[in-house]
Image 1: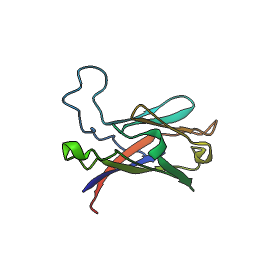
Image 2: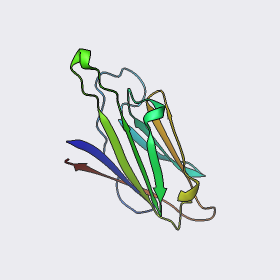
Image 3: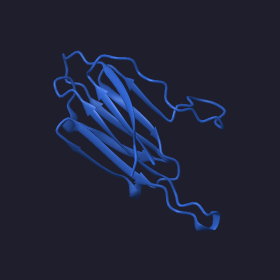
Image 4: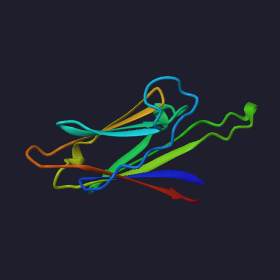
Length: 131
């Protein structure tokens, strides 16, 4: 079973509370955060153990997709975690083609710029995919 995140930006609705990391002692304990700035939508996704070289992402139409795998550690009988998700943006409010994606120290940052003069709001939906 894998957890997949879908973010709808540009729709109305409430943002559900993300899963918390009970072992983290300071800072936001959300597994992911979606914030809106004056110029963009910024998503931060914790992907611990995933190297930058393993990140795969692409943009198609109004979607941003991303995947990365934590390497297996057989000495600990750990097969590694797999991460992935899709974000859907309102193409009338966000310039999805100019999306910037980077993975730094196990944290994925996705920045999607707003189209100047357009009113945008963020709606986050979660879904669980089984495969």
